[in-house]
Image 1: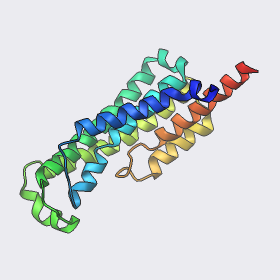
Image 2 (image 1 turned 45 degrees about the horizontal axis):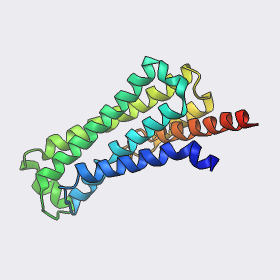
Image 3 (image 1 turned 60 degrees about the vertical axis):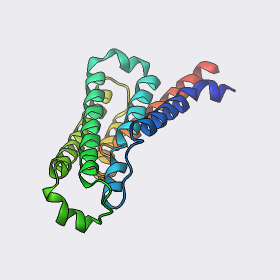
Length: 188
């Protein structure tokens, strides 16, 4: 029962994010090349959960404006990724194109090139924002130097077209582990 009492917010956040994703993207049905873009547009939902978990698991971090700013920068970049990818999905429509067909046929479609450009730029902004978030959390003594280095390396090495700024996952896990350790010490 203690486990449920300690960790129910994570389940609630994931459930809420999943429901919002289903509601907001319910009108999108993509195949072929567009399906990859639709999948990439969902990163903002998981990213929002990660930021909420970070702020929930490290209450003292909430009092620092720079934590909120870095978190907001990362989410804003993920919103840019989502908007860019959804532009591409809208441009392709119901066509079941391969990547080669999309490259050959998509250039003339409104939103195709601009969507790719926005998603591409936003991916790299998300990587930069994830690095900034790790540095801010380190400077505010919320994480150790090892966790910060690990998060930065994961953000820089993990392909941003899969999940931009993936090091934020490392930050969320590390802060949950720290939270659990503190709660266990209090319970003793």
